Image 1 (tube, one colour):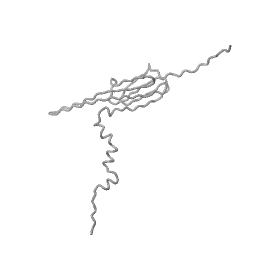
Image 2 (tube, rainbow, N blue to C red):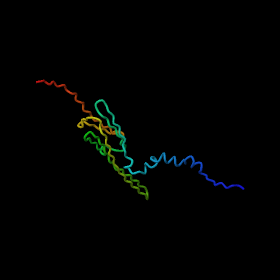
Image 3 (tube, rainbow, N blue to C red):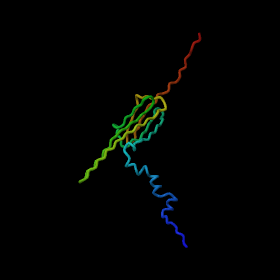
Image 4 (tube, helix red, strand yellow):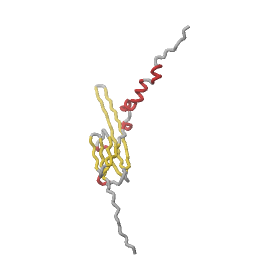
Length: 149
């Protein structure tokens, strides 16, 4: 008599890990990027570069204008904040779609040395914010002659 074997068409996929599981696990952030609220999308990357006479902070802020960005320095901490509101309106015959999303970010970085906060310069081009922060030259210790009495 022949034994009955249960036919399982997905056994091989289950053993190796399903193509769909691998695809969605690897690509989940990309797939859902368009469905996340704007606030979940905004986390600018920072680079702090020490130059000869200044620090250069680069931040990726695509889609922001200079009016939407606020930069401040307090006690050696540089803080960059941004806030924007996006509104998409699509009108067609018998169809109206309006979507509003808003979000903000705030990132701070401790600067590694003394700075001249009165001469900080910032520029925004192609979604990259460059902040140049002049360093204060270290004072050289002076030799003082002390007379013995």
